Amino acid sequence: MRTRLPRALGALAFYLLILVVFVYLVFPFYWAIVSSLKSPQELFQTPVTYWPTHPRWQNYLDVFTMQPFGRNLLNSAIVAGTTTLISLLVGSFAAYALGRFRFFGKRPVYYAILSVSMFPQISVLGGMYVLIKTLGLYNTWWALIFSYMIFTLPFTVWVLTSFVREIPLELEEAAYVDGATPLQTLFKVLLPLMAPGLVTSGLLAFIGAWNEFLFALTFTVDDRARTVPVAIAFFSGASQYELPWAQIMAASVIVTVPLIVLVLVFQQRIIAGLTAGAVKG
Amino acid sequence: MARRLSLSARRARIAWAFMAPSVLILLAVAAYPLFRTFQLSLFRANLLDYPLRPEWVGLANYAYMVQDLYWWTSVKNTVIFTVASVSLETVLGLGVALLVNAKFPLRGMMRTAMLIPWAIPTVVSAQMWRWMYNDVYGVINDLLLRVHLIAKPVAWLADPHLVLPAIIAVDVWKTTPFMALLLLAGLQSIPEELYEAARVDGASGVQQFWFITLPLLVPALLVALIFRTLDALRVFDVIYVMSGVNPSTMSMSVYARQQLVDFGDLGYGSALSTGIFFIIALFVALYLSVLRVEVD
Image 1 (cartoon, rainbow over the protein chains, first blue to last red):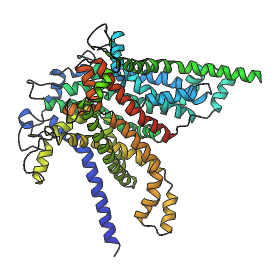
Image 2 (image 1 turned 90 degrees about the horizontal axis):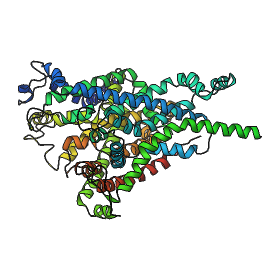
Image 3 (image 1 turned 180 degrees about the vertical axis):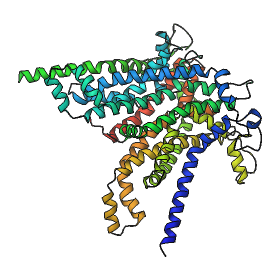
Image 4 (image 1 turned 30 degrees about the vertical axis):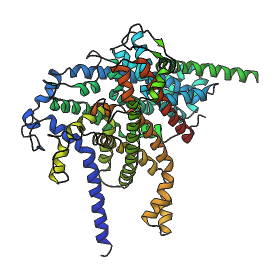
């Protein structure tokens, strides 16, 4: 009897804390959803209402009709998708070399790749701008795909190398004995076994490219190549002083939903990738 | 012996063939633009000129930088942002990690909720909070007024003393869960037997935390800390979206981009970028030496 009450209190405090943390994490999303469904009158009224009285789904259509958001989504999907595919292909070559071969210059190359992943994007901004202008890529998808390699490729190489190292050698040796070339060995033996690593690093590369802002802001001028983050930062309303908050919130919800689905489906993989990137070493 | 040597030479050639595409791409997207930025920092040039007409000025850009008060303001803002957000995120992240490390129903849901702030674009979280911070129609003022913590609405993003703390709060919201997940992985690698042994010896929960959890968590904590510090030092998105280019909040990256792109001052902007590069390179060197990454 004497220990049961404090224990119950402890459990209550524990769940209360869990609830507080959960509300803290989720409330901004709740607020974005609620705001995205409000009419202009309800949005700009005091006191604030915590539930939309007449959900206005029209806001979600307005995002596509009053803003070029469809085009922005397409740009983002193409840029992030292509960046991810190129990084995975090129990155798995490098991971194979770094994970399986001994060669002169391996350590410096590995360190160089590692340090590229850490240096700030701003430090290449001027040089990159001039290069992109010179190559005629300014305001195109390729400007972004090209510049995004600076952060997706080193990361992909790093995560994939740690996966290659964990694959047992025997399978490759069998392939060599059968006379397979290194390229065949990589594609037929290693890549299928690297599938979890490809999913993890691919996801993280995709999310990184999908969310990138600084390069997208600097290397695009209009909706030909403008991606979702820049669009959401620059949504404009009827007047300069009145931001279309309902539309901004609707657009925010639209880009958040697919990410929530990805996180739900690939939760374990993402955490594995994050910790492989950070804790391993 | 000769055969073995030629085999290893052949293997090395194959390895370099596999490395080549990555190395070439990184030379093009990282090494060359970085070198070009260093080089441009020694010139005066206008971004909008095409072709560029760089004019050699030597170290003049750096001489200007040393006495540019806006630059030092941006350094100060960045340091405040970094120290405040990283230390808050570490303490709160450790708390959340300890909490979620316990087994309870709906733990999976909690973990998902923790990943979402990390996964969404910073621009989106900045806009969501900007609306919540709105001085007239914002929910934060409404909630604080209801519980009587404030007497009248606060202009969070317009008050020069409040805007940086308000932005730091957004970063803490977005990054604490990420920190917690990194620390959670560290917590879960601590063998359960240690705690059992401690309990047998009569150690209290607090003692277990101080003498087992914390010392064994130090490597994970250190890595997470350095990771976050590097990230915070280059902060751009959240500050740019929430308050634009504004002396009371602008970070080093925000100021450098303004000079470089908005003002088209390629030379001075590049000098600022180079300055940021060397500041962060110091931390990267520290990071690599702490991690002691093994290649073989």
